[in-house]
Length: 481
Ligand SMILES: [Zn+2]
Ligand SMILES: [Zn+2]
Image (tube, rainbow, N blue to C red; front, side):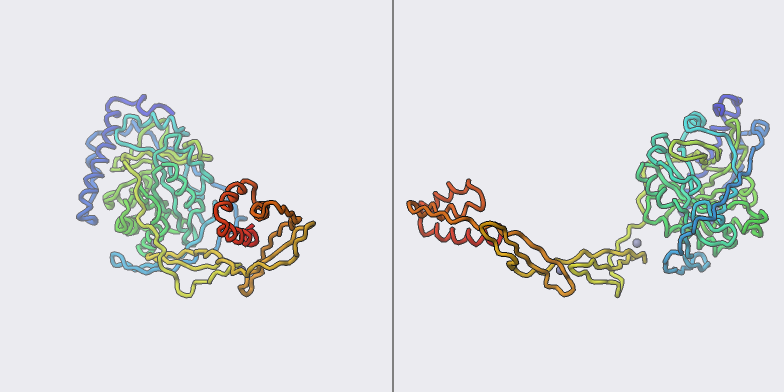
């Protein structure tokens, strides 16, 4: 990989800096305007054309199709238990769809045959590529295809953000799938200080399905710290063989806008992901949200896409410490100063009716708690205390041998019993010269000799008290040795 700026003319250098600057300006303008009117915005891409890009500067994209072997031996997990919620949004009715956690490399995963391309950019090369870009942040986007990621290493390499796949709609049958590594990736990336965004790989054929997907995504991410945008990813619009083969560009744009509009209504920043070909079919002007362009170039060349874009996926052949294999690399022409709070924190304050199983002294109980959002969680109720009888002698102590006593739990069904030893009996010692000392010696012998002097004092002060104390201590030695 060449340095991004080395081979370019002065004019091109200005263009490279100017495009993102203009793009960010448009983005901000749109974001501000969006607060009052979301639907009517048209993002004008013409503005960027003013910087007079020269076509010949930008070479053709080199793309190759990587076919990944499918492992059908992995059993896909069972369908989750979820109560479907029905809503109406912008005149469209939809229920949160059922889903399952897809096995990695599932045959239904639309990223099975995803186009790969771009330069084999390392993390340090990525640093120099965008060093003069102004406001920016650098990130990766990942899914179960990357496998087990060491997020501490990713963070140490300088990655700012990760757009993590929450799930996808099945390539063939349209089933909803959670990415096998979604929860692990979000939790560990966040824990290591990497700011997280989310993408969903859609295969919606109409607005209802797109709304279903958006509802599903929000439900999955609502308790996480999602700082970067929530992204609608639809690819291969109208391509034969795909579920969306019959979907027109206009329909795809409408589906995408339904998804993005719902995401925005739930307080997240929406963003559209598309490659040059698909954004051409959908029309950049039909979208008012941030746009993430996928365009793999070689030789460190910038994209020749002239429309406004706020994030650029410039290669799928990146390498980042902590990520096995190749990974998509991105630059965002924006950044966030702080990590977002979760949109929702479960309260789990309500006990689901008839769910409580009372604990006993020998078995844990259980109850199901419900959050105001509908999410449920099982709670283990700890065992109760045993109800113990008083101590009974099982074996008497003698001068030669310790005895044994026991007590039992009297709750029905419980077999708990505890035992303890009884000390050997002391051989009787009589000192007729000093009666006080004799009684003391009997008491202290089972404890320690140090007590003797103190007790001797008490005893010599008042005879009446000492006799009472002696009685008490004698009792104590029996019950609590
Ligand atoms: Zn909740
Ligand atoms: Zn018991």
